[in-house]
Amino acid sequence: MLRFAPSPNGLLHLGHALSAIANERMAEAVGRPLTLRIEDIDQTRARPHFEAAIIADLAWLGVDWTPPMRRQSEHFAAYRDALERLKARGLVYPTFASRREFAEVARMTGLARDPDGAPLFPGDAAILGAREAARRLAEAEPAAWRLDMTRALADLPPLTWTETDAAGGAARTIGSEPAAWGDVILARKDVPTSYHLSVVVDDAVQGISHVVRGMDLYPSTSVHRVLQTLLGLPAPLYYHHPLILGEDGRKLSKSNGAESLAALREAGATRAAVRARVAARLAEPS
Ligand code: GLU
Image 1 (cartoon, protein in one colour):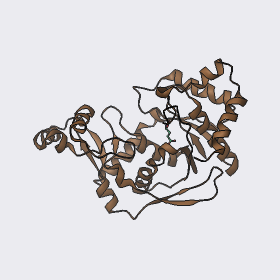
Image 2 (spheres, protein in one colour):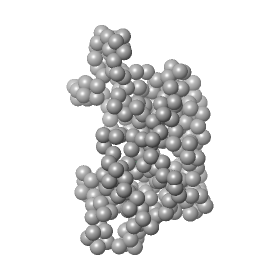
Image 3 (cartoon, helix red, strand yellow):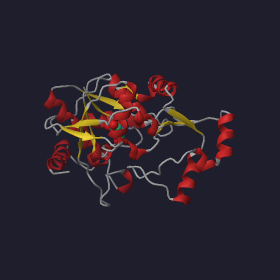
Image 4 (cartoon, protein in one colour):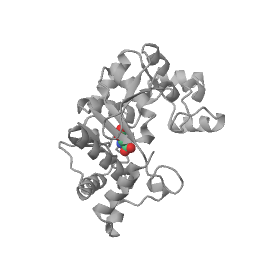
């Protein structure tokens, strides 16, 4: 089983079309179904009309997917269970610093960065001071939860994953580098899970054999391998596809002027034209 897994917090653009079509091609090549997963854990940003637009855009593109569609917001209990298992093993810890407090310290002190460019978490004591951190812990204030990466890795052998080509062949073994991420966040105060945690749980529950997603998520696979191993979940095969870049050389997004598929369609673009554009990008080297 394969999955296309967009977040319903905006309209799909060409980059999403590429991802959907890369999934469709792999599904065909390996003879397995493709399904749709709506990654809507962040309920402050997810909107039903964006979910409806995703379904309409896939139909317009002619990308067929096999129901049932999985909506992550309906499975918070499964993510909580996974977090509880990690808590029981002492592999996660609570953190009380707010995002704003963390950002302020990061701005002042120039912390090292993770592969996404976000500052590495230095611990509550470094952000709040030891005394305030202890007070919030003692008063059991609402907490976010982070993976204790050092502790987690201490118990694990070096982890790898298998990266294939676009058709599921030419398997290569990639060494993962999870330490570069530091203590990743697994549950927030306002969102009781995280991208990393929910994606590994869902890939296992849905029996995903091949994960096809953008190169921008390549570094995240290191974190996913750690979580899969800690939780005893199987490792899918991975293919990280090339990205369509915006004029600023960064991944296409609304903020760098990506036109939505809906806007392209309204301007007269045909399915064949969009598919041809995507096929051309997939044929180029990453
Ligand atoms: N929801 C993620 C995104 O829209 C994709 C997650 C994944 O494929 O693992 O970028």
